[in-house]
Length: 167
Image (cartoon, rainbow, N blue to C red; front, side, top):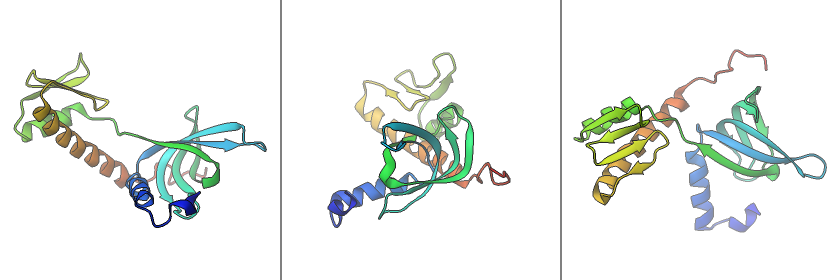
């Protein structure tokens, strides 16, 4: 399957997106068992991938119950059913501060679990932006993207949490 993409724009975009996910938390489902009907699920930090085989390397690997099962783990690309990134959790106070630096009135609404932007928009912890003003939405999404990028960079800079573990 990987050979059918060689040289194509689609392959380049796919690998660019995968490369941008390095350092991010991911959830991976893979086929297991002799018949491949069993599905295993793992969560960890994507640290590398092989573009030829689509094998991936995870750090701080947990099973579906949240139990840490390995410091690092390679998953065979042929067994991967799906992989999705988990966005970093937004720090609402930090986001409100960034919005203020961008010239917007912003305050954390703890009851709503969101940042209230001048009573014209809400940005929820999930990253959802609620507003009817398209120009404001564009500005908010730029600040939000920068906040996500910064959160991801902080995660990438963290040492592996199990570095001293014997797992």
